[in-house]
Image (cartoon, rainbow, N blue to C red; front, side):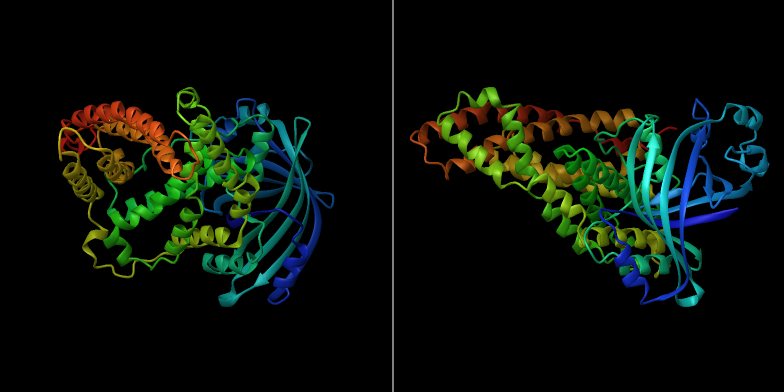
Length: 506
């Protein structure tokens, strides 16, 4: 058995010359150039995939070898999986040749063998360089160009993989940093096998996912809770990055930004823990990314005015001028190509590399810090209570709040709900869902005000002959929404906080 540890990158052009240029400045001990053909197998019921295993036969230079990859983990672009590779005589696998210990106790290996079928194949040209680095580290750089073939369809392979032959993960990231110095590199969170399953129609087509809660557990320490939150956020981020590159949508971008914002938010919740660990070097880059995506708020408002609020806008004074202003602002938004270019930029890829490297390499530099080993439940209760009291301080200002107060409350409410995202999984699901529901409803209603706010702002730029009528119409539209918000807010204030009722019972 070997433990495969590698970084994967998708690239948008032929990078052979770039790799040669960078790697020739280092110590290359071996080069290879070969054509590889891989056939992937599973049962009709995908029993191997259900065990989180991947099975393939690789053929090259007239030889065959079978490989089975076991359950592993992926953080950012770093993939770590145990794998077993054995020579074989033909292009059909023999599961009995692998150690019996790799299978769960009740696995019927004979039945699996009888049920195997081919799913898809990959054919690609691979160039490799073995690079010797400091401390006897040896890293193989592989550049693959070819295709995945499944069900008569093809998907291009254009990937760079960096795999540790010997040595440390630290040098793996150091080499990656040297290579990612030009646009067009994207950390790959999906393997060729995962892409093949999707192309073969054996995986559901990806779609926008709601974030849900960070999967913290009561047994975790505060340090473990932080790492869980960061890994959870990074997976959510990268899923929606890949989704946007394949199926561009505002929804995918909003989820990506929410994940990046959640990572930044952990700095407020886990301040003491961060101070005890290796210093981070990615906070400025995350701020930069969120600023790059700040246009999303207006884009969502404009989109909703085109669809959800179209009928309402037909009754607005200055409708023609308003429609023209909406169109003008839409023209100013970044294009899909520009946004995809952001995700292929050097700084963006380097940001994900920094995050991945920190998660893989961080150390506890101040082990005597009390907060490191305390149960996460203690921090959860403290954080939720502090956030709740801040929210109440504004929510209880009066039975009726004006528009300006609700604008301030919106940002505070987003902060409060994000604290819940980090810790709600520790508590009884029915209680926390009941408590969060009115506040989620309020946030939704506050989002409904954003198109009215946008029109208020746009009115100052429009040459509208009925400006006063427009302002009066906006005030009439605003009033019933404020009344509804007051009603939701009063219900929310009356709810008992779920963290005061103890941990979840399971």
